[in-house]
Image (cartoon, rainbow, N blue to C red; front, top):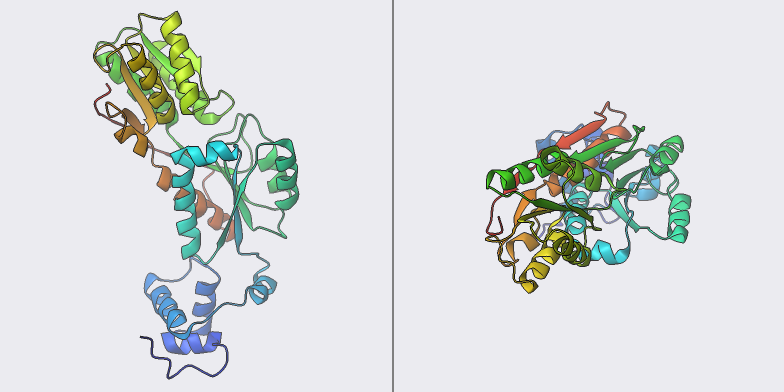
Length: 335
């Protein structure tokens, strides 16, 4: 039970928080405004005092002082159906949200694929509504990062663009992870290794296919959209056109799960007849039959790093243009 005996009759003030925490008013202000220029010890003292006093920052007053909205947009350029179906998006949203909450910032989640959604999105993303934007699953050479930066809205994107742009980016080593997966299959004696690619207008789709080609060259390939149904359809096509295949590298765990279903229906044993490797190391990989060998990518770390870069931009700090995080192959029963 909190001790409220020293609380003033009115709304707690910044000065009262400072007195309770035993720090200066400026330190409290920096904590409340989400500045990184505060020691962990001082931040905890201030946060404890805020909790004890029930202090609620006046966002309108803060906005006048800081010229910020305290809101960050997380924009996903996919359909709602795919967003809710694929574990990748849930994991990265959770990672982004946890960092923003710790900095007293709000996350505005926006999902846009249809032209009308896109027009509304572009109209909303201004400094009057958000301080910056995190962009996920951009397709092709999308001009939006350039448009936002020209408006003064700092951006960080997941995945590299087709051409260099002004926004910073965070990515996993998709090409290296795919290369490691296909090399492993080759080392296990697999001689006809096929791939199910992701969309070839996305950075992960392109990079994972390039990693496959680094090892196999022009091998059997079918294109999917990272979803389970597309993986099943691609696997059916590969079996029809390359019945001799003895391994499949799928560019996502969802597509690998669809491929496993088709192989089972076709009477192909996994891994005895056909080895299967996915990408993401999602929860799905641990629940397929057999459990799926998959390339791990640090999704939570990607989300956290995207937020770190964006907040550094907002604070006027120099930031690296490109951050690429390592991947690794996780071996299970499918290969």
